[in-house]
Image (cartoon, rainbow, N blue to C red; front, side, top):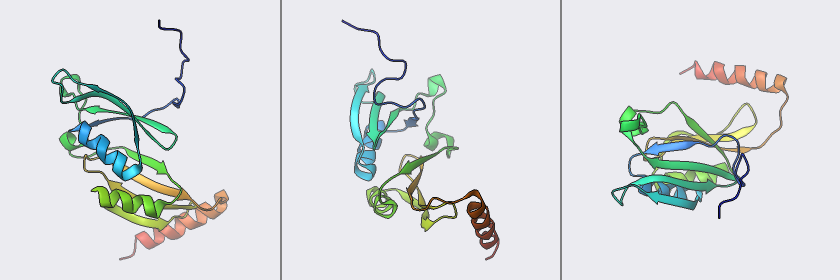
Length: 160
């Protein structure tokens, strides 16, 4: 028998990304391979092949995922021709996780770099069009140190 639940279910945070993709089943397998995702639940669509809803866990964070559903205005980055979202993923070893994602089929958009805010950070786009920032926090910096580093970083970006 069902019983009352918590407003935020156990194991979830108050904000949970919900990814829309083409071929959600393949995407789940990619996230397992690239980021060590654990599949929590998968509900098939009416056709028995598509994914109507799934939940995966990466580290201590849950993500929901489903095949795109254009009839309800839920489209994948592939359909839209890009994404406005970057999933920021903190890991123990940014370089190792980055390489694992690339080996699994992600496209490099920014190789891992020591960033002015204290993280080792790189970016990839997964085969389903979602952008992932992969980071390991290395240094706790003051706002003044970050501002100085940002100015130096921006100055270098303006030079060929």
